[in-house]
Length: 474
Image (cartoon, rainbow, N blue to C red):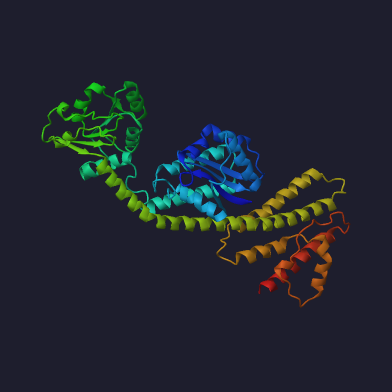
């Protein structure tokens, strides 16, 4: 089984290709419900406006099944030659960097983490993840949190819409905390304006209003952002009454005209930010008393400065992701290395239990089912503490590989074929075996009739193997 990260994003293919393979929530739920993957496979689908990616723990057959399913949904062949492809450490690192905003079109994009969390939530709902991807996703969330708090990758505004709000914060300065007490007006109800209102998420203004040529669209945006609406014909008086105005319409000419604005008291001031192209604010407005205008030239300079600062933070952000990737790989190795040892311990204890139950099965007063339940319960309680402690061992605190091999050697049931070789080793008092000589394999011959001698022999062999491995370790 291998970790894979593959798919399509803005780095490899044009938007029309990514768009063809986009998955909405219904698509993803359908995939989780219908994909026929291998028993231990785990998968998460992430689909945003500029990426459709698959995070998989599985095998090559699982990859093929997923690619065929994506092709079927898109109605075209999955473009393997154009898709990105990472395995194991590279795949893990990719997931961490995506969640942290390092691989976003605009570095430090704050939306991607919530999109990754939503994708993970859907995968959990679809019963598509188990311990490995659970752990990987929570490692990705830790990486995103550390990148956000330990670097400036997400600082500043990285789009024109968010920059309009960021520049307004800087304009009003410390005199106004999160726009508290200000009246905010949005002129226009398109995508750019909605994004700007979204950037006001944590603000506490006195009021937010929306005006648009189409009253229905203004009402829709106002409902979404808990704002009021103002008739389009009253926009100029609304602009003069506002403290902060965002103008973003699709009109080919200015919609805020200097000569239509009422005169202002010199003590009042209105900030207007024009994020439309072509400009929607008459340049003459900036010359009026009580009005200040920022346009796209001001905003682009602000965004470029932000992008430069964010780009400079990418190396540090990658260091954090690499560090957490190493932690995750160590954890995976820890878990995978432990499983054979834990299975050996359980198998050996269970073989002893079954032999003892079989030995007493001839007793007429014995209820086989009750004894079976009782001995299983005893075995689980005996094993609970050592196995939990074993799982919590820090792999850096001991010679982990050698320690796991020693446990496996101590508790493994001897193979039938190696009994004669083991006897020869026991007779060679001065021979020092290596851990690679440890027998592993078939069950005991439970049909043998030596009764309690089987248990005694097992214990003797366990002690002998323990002594041999102790000498080998020294």
